[in-house]
Length: 424
Image 1 (spheres, rainbow, N blue to C red):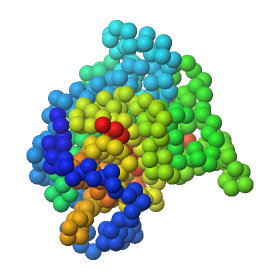
Image 2 (image 1 turned 135 degrees about the vertical axis):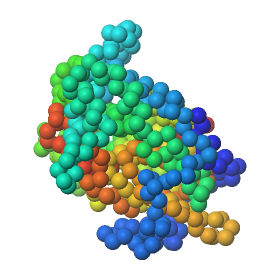
Image 3 (image 1 turned 90 degrees about the vertical axis):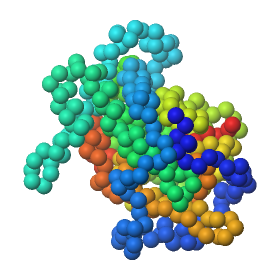
Image 4 (image 1 turned 180 degrees about the vertical axis):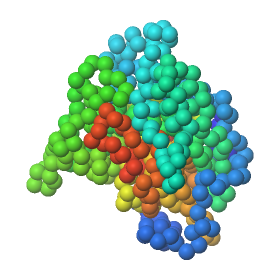
């Protein structure tokens, strides 16, 4: 399905984005709205101004067919589970080829192991009265614990727990929100891919690479498996070790892995390696965009190609300043996925003729997906506030008991994956 059908068609005027200045400041009125949300107090009139995704009740023009979602979600989880080392660092191409050639039945044993590693991260929440409040995933976790062989049977049900409804935001033409689109197991699998595999690939640059030389962890086992701490992931290293050494010791100090993962790591680039200083994509051929993530996204948002992405990592006090994404040469939609803690998202457009500002403030929760197309694709947007300790229970324990130093790391984090097409 083309989710862009749920919003206005891309107008011919959108091509003028090539003349938009990436350094231009946002309108003052929008800055004031953004600033009002940075403090501890809720701005006056906020209840009328903010859309909570759980309160959206009027579906958009199109909703996403469940069969398309289920196929995309289940295929994504199975691909990760079927390839040893895939989520904890790639194997050699020859090994990958042999794995792909194996019969499906011979690979099925990996899926129960993978699901087991994710479900062991789930702990039952307790309500104030002391009674257990089980989420759907927690129910699956308990069933799985009793009979692990049934893991593959549950996968179809697990991926069916996401919402399939798309909503249009009338004030911002082209902006579509899909609240709760991603089921819990897909969110967990995305975290595995982004923070274990992609962060461990030297070709994916971070905000630290400009000033630091990075030492990457080495696999101590040739076939790392889900939930094991013996893979080449920064979460498996000593938190007090210094994997980030300054290029200029006179200007910067060495950073421990703990400091990096807790607060210093702000972003990771995938595929096209965006140059934040020049605000452009380098001319050289970029690293290949992760194929499994591309398949997942393109199966749902069919009018764009996943060629570049930025993974933003937010801590409790972090913000994202108002900006526009105008460096891409394609007028295709942008996909934004939220994982972990909730946030305030501000977006606005200024009428070029009247100067009138149209804006909306949204609360984005884990599993919500935004699709910015049409006019909204080049709208000003930013994140003035993160709500700590709002991470859903099924992500609170990630990366899991195999990494005890990082228990409840996600309770302090919001992860945003925003994906775009660079060229037509």
